[in-house]
Image 1 (spheres, rainbow, N blue to C red):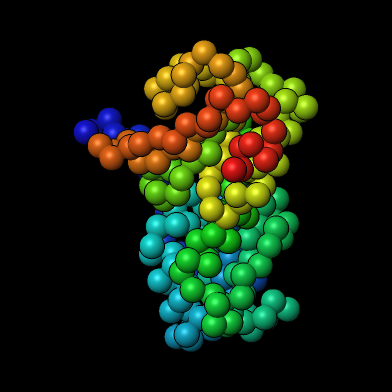
Image 2: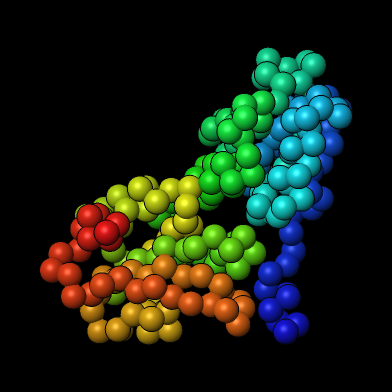
Length: 217
């Protein structure tokens, strides 16, 4: 149990760091060398309350997160900006529209916060355990070429916003996660890592071709 708790920790700081100026935001970027989400919200506004609700849900625990008053910014009030490690804008989310509910926000974070079809890391596995978002994994024998990765990347892009996705050449995971362990490449959808309720949905290895359509359907 203690090892499990240690594996899941630590979270990246408070639910959201309050910033009082754009110069504070500049410093925050320098202090957080990883992906971040910045909310431009007016204090005590409906959008600020939504931001508090979403950050307290834990969906942003893997990222830096802060909120700043939009008074001195060109960014409209009620906007959340996803940034890469260099501070470049990746995408925006509008808290002012009626469709900006918790589920829509979660899908947006998954799509723009995590790498799509990158190499499987301990961090991604921890994210599956903490966010409960399904993890779509391709398993290869050896490091795949770009041509070999292409079908999986296509499927992962189609599922973006609904799953975490990654590939691995650690074939011992194949049998552990429900695949045959005799045919590669293969794939599996993983749920519930680090819990007694983990389960796996393996790719149908009897399909004749390994392509994007077969991975999606």
